[in-house]
Length: 151
Image (cartoon, rainbow, N blue to C red; front, side, top):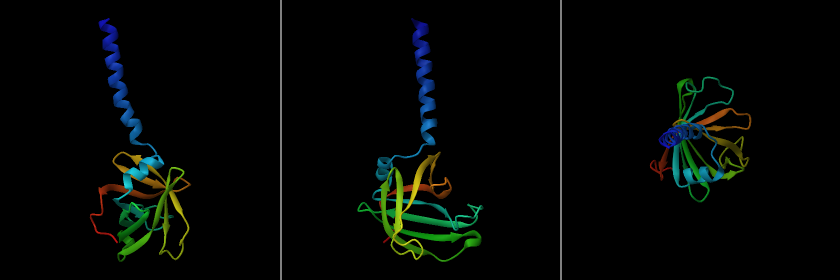
């Protein structure tokens, strides 16, 4: 009896240690994405140009406020060799087929065209990947509300 109880406890502890590890690198469902970002601000980095290989040296640090009404406001600053001035971006967001979709209202190239990404938790960050699996953005922090007063 003692051996059975001890084996069960060891198995339960081992299982509890492996479940978070599996969940740590998991794609978020549409419901999880909505719960996490609606009414909150994501901060992170994105590549300046999709074909650039030097992700962390040529990019944009951004802050995106996801309004609960499906609108967003974003501000970014280029860093590294891609340095440039701040830029404001606006548009709508929605979740479609477990992907987060951005529709930029002030984009010249992609105006009105939904750009959708899968959101995957990777350790302490979230990666947003395109349909080909390329990482387009990395959210390093999700903050409650609109702490940067993005409009």
